[in-house]
Picture 1 (cartoon, rainbow, N blue to C red):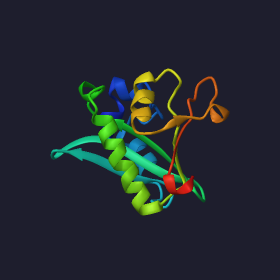
Picture 2: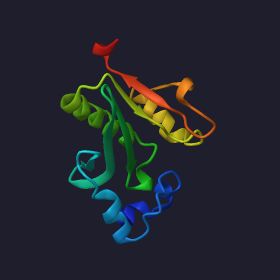
Picture 3: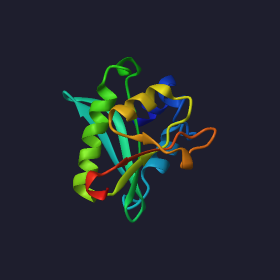
Picture 4: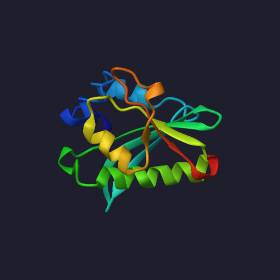
Length: 140
């Protein structure tokens, strides 16, 4: 399933690690669970997307995600899933900040992340990366 998703044009445009065979996907996504925590978003019994997080420092978590169905984009599903994912991370890890780094051109993702409370951090951004942070209220 993950191999199929990774070949979809709306995913490949922004998430292309060269995982174009089952062997490559298996090797890439079977790394130590200590490094990266991986999840499938399931909505109404249907596998809807892939979500992962990893610790970037003692108080920061980095996240990456995508929705499986290109037809579900721009309908609020991404924001709904990401909000739930952030809640899960807060409960497990209690980080001060959660970060993500969409491509500058990925306006759809940036709008979604803004809806979820992430804000742009120009100091950590560059010509390609639009670095965004969400700071836990308790950390302020």
